[in-house]
Length: 597
Image (tube, rainbow, N blue to C red; front, side, top):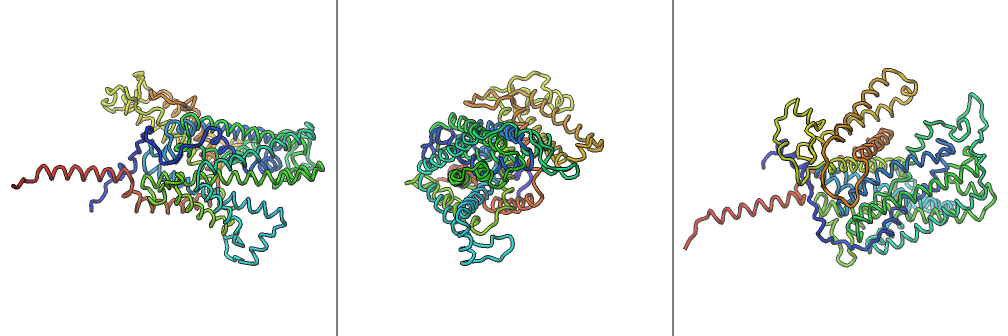
């Protein structure tokens, strides 16, 4: 057995998947642009619309929560545009996993795919547990009491009882997804329409009781004790608006499930970009509308952070509206559950088809045209987690997976936009690399108009350097916010240096020649919009607590063991190379062997 050297390992890590967009998929192409838009809205506009506006307005931003939502929507839209370009460029199931496999190589692709599996499993489990809790609350926690008396669990870090309702709902939804994408899409459309109808009802009904004077109220407090801000439109100041935007950003997570439908959309090059932009726009309008109504009907400091709508209707004397809002919340949770569970088997299918995880998980059922075993096994894992775990400490793991995927997709957009052109100026690739030639290459002194292999490699290096600088800059901002606000020079000086470095790297990328590939949809203002997306996502990752990173690290160690002991040898690229090598060796043996008569 030959020992692998550094060059061999690097070759394995960077081997890239070739996409043949003309090939037919085994999955059924049955989803229209409307289906994809409804899927994006349903997976994004979940229970957050019933909780987030109230909690952020009371504790973080005040009535300025509408600005926080606008900032979060802008950040999400930038990430959505990056996904839209890749959805049009690489119309295959697997979302960020496939995108990174095409551009970054196999190792990064596996890391992203494994991260996405974690994100969707935890996201689905948390949604179904939330659905169970919400339904149980309507019936005075009768399910919880029954489950506790039947099978009490006394183990730390686990739920105090097995939630059989959550497990059953998960299996039911998994079966619905396994037995047909079109049928599950129809159910999602119904849930989404009901959810949006209730949101519209809340906005219209609340408008009759709205009073703009509530944007200028002041909470009862003293100079020594004023925990609820100083009143007015922005009682917590600019810092509160930015902090609120970081929280509101998580209310837009979920649109990326649209990008996983590349092999089931009828016209993915057009449908995916339209669906992503349309769903994010609708979700922002919903968040904006409910935020305005909540803060105009009641002062921000009187909001209920856990159930703002029922509290609102209690205050205005509309008891009957409670049940209507509850119905909308249940529909929203069901829609979120479908949206969270839908992309999970698609990512498993994509990774299993490529041989990076077990092949049987990606086998497509000939009758239902879905990855049946992958869907059911993912549903079983999600159901078990939802039944036995309290997921409060694990919700952040969903966020870290999403933000990492967003960052990788934005980086892939940059790298592909500057990839080697089909008509490239090959003479520049043979230039001797001296300090002078490297400087000329960095500033494109030769005014090269077509991207070369050398310029493409330079952009890849610059993107990696930009990512590292973002980590350094955002970690300082997250760790020393108080010192930065006080203008402490010991932290201001390195901050200025990092800002100058970030701008310089971006400017160098901007000067490089771009690829001439024509796209049906492309991100505008490259490299600046994808770079801004990377900066925002890395900052939000730096805001997560240390235990989230520890749990994430444990999950990644498990994944790396699977990759090194299974994926490296069973990867389709590796298998094809071995097969081609065997064919060549057999051919040589047949030519060289003596002929007997």
